[in-house]
Amino acid sequence: MMHPPDGRSPVAVALGWSSRIMSVSLEMVVPGLIGNWLDGRFQTSPWIMVIAFAAGGAVAILHLIQMTKPSGNRGPARQAEEQEKSDR
Image 1 (cartoon, rainbow, N blue to C red):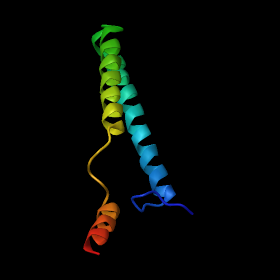
Image 2 (image 1 turned 180 degrees about the vertical axis):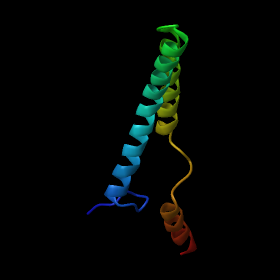
Image 3 (image 1 turned 180 degrees about the horizontal axis):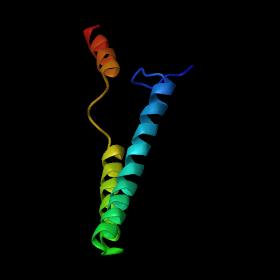
């Protein structure tokens, strides 16, 4: 079985990605639902909901951009591997 370069199991990688996808999905939907509730409470339909969905979408897009940027931070397994190579 082939493991990712950071040494995690494929199941751990899959769970990490599924939690990222879920958090981005919730960032898009929850503000709109709260806006819908506020619209019903203040009788301003549909303005708060539209603004909340737009804000949630913007936050989700920013989060997706942040997740796809390559990071200079390598995992601990990769750092240990590089340290071993440099010690030799």
